[in-house]
Image (tube, rainbow, N blue to C red; front, side, top):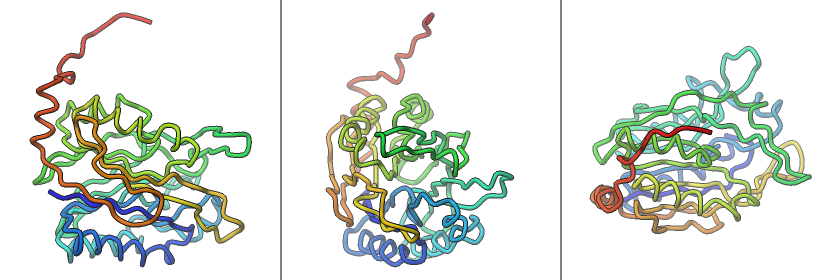
Length: 278
């Protein structure tokens, strides 16, 4: 099975972002031959102005990006991971959901996952993020069954929490998806290392489509910059594809036999032991 990772530089305007996303999804399927296409976190919009986002985001039921990409998956007959969409919710505090969708080749939603871990960090004195102020965290890990293997869903900052991936792998995951809008500073330092570690620890393929570059903002100068380097990692830890720093698609052919082979060599998923302390 061939996977195609779509790398984007989206703005905070979902309407403006959709044509490029659709074009790259079609390129991945029609020109690249990918049967499993994946887009990054914040596929519909990336921005930090909560009032602006409230004016342009939709609920899941009404979201035009979700509807359009479901139609594309059905037309192209592909499995499509929409890395995540910012969605309005009915929460009293007005917070959004950061939700990943796995779409089947008939256009139906096979699985949905709300990002569990919120990016509340002080990257530098001038870069402070409080994702939980605008997005409500999820609380449930999600494993989806497909004809080509079991897919464990996650989003971006989740990658720093290894226990999530171990649980997904021990539940049967063959593939771990890590769509991201990874900060350019932390990305340069940690992105590849974390993804390779998750693959090595679990014996899974890791598929990590990413946002890249400087993201246009409708309410002022662009401030968000992301790392890019969409990565496909093999179960033994090798980098099979790297998207660099420009929008586009990267590919790799995947085989679940490689998952079984890696786990046979180092069966660490079956070696857990109880221990005491601290």
